Image 1 (tube, rainbow over the protein chains, first blue to last red):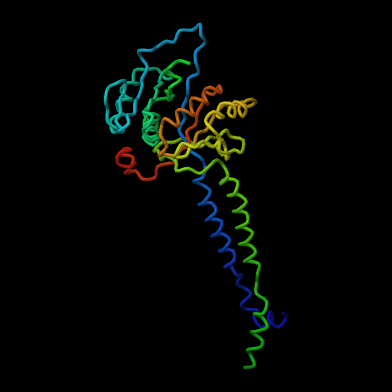
Image 2 (image 1 turned 180 degrees about the horizontal axis):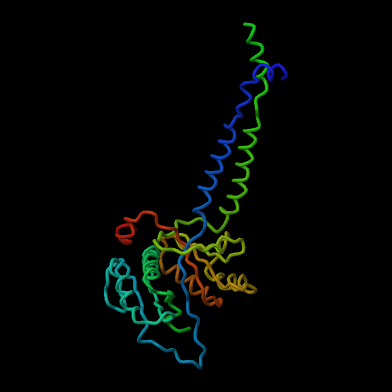
Amino acid sequence: MAIQLGGKGGAMSEPNVVPLIDVLLVLIIIFMAITPTTPVGLKAQVPQPAPPNEKPEMQTRTIVVQVARDGGLKINEQPVTWSTLGTQLVAVFKERAPGDRVAFIKGDKDVPYLYVARAIDIMSASDVEMVGLLTKKVEEGQ
Amino acid sequence: MAYKPKAGATLSEPNVIPMADIMLVLLIIMMITVPRLQQGTSVDMATVANPVQMKDAEKEDAVLLSITHDGTIFFRTTKIHLTDVTPQVRDALKDRLDKVVYIKADQRAKYGDVTAVVDDVRAAGDEQIGLITEKLTDPAVEVEGPKGGG
């Protein structure tokens, strides 16, 4: 080793950065792999049954978005398209106070979950603060 | 020829430190990724344009239900029957302050299977649902809606 140091003194003055680059590259790969794994999702609510002595209210003002088996959409029985759902909802909720912007979603039992997820996505992007899932038991009032 | 033995002598000991560095980092990667992979069961999640971050869903004690495309239900990583959803969720939520149940459903799952699980979660006394999805990265699909992108 002493021979090598003496003979290559000039070469040793430049530190070898290749291992450093290797480690940094691997670190970059780690960060690239980890960042997208943070889970993302859509918030939704399921209303709990009201206490028996309380009357359910605001029935007429409830907004229900329905997803049919073929992927067709309806807002309160009125057909809409996927591209206009957002603007329709914004128009409906414009007059409502924040905190009152609640909409429910109901899907056919055979419709793929993706359609419903996309509809909830559009709803939460267009001023709906709370998306309620209208399930069978919720509808039956149990 | 007088030079050759000298060069051979220096090369006889390869420098393993960079290799060790890389191996260490790889080890750290494995340590980080393995528990993440065990989080729930992997399903083909629905892609949506505007999801919100749900950091709590990746916690080890998160109440996470997965629904595969054929309607099989997994509580965390164990396969359970639909009738066991309510007691399991109630048990898991018993002494928790954040009563959020995360549902990770396959995008091809029938919505009826999802609502059946949601009904049972509701029966366990939960109101807050987090539907775990993936962020949609292709903006063209978003405009087309599910019919085009599905």
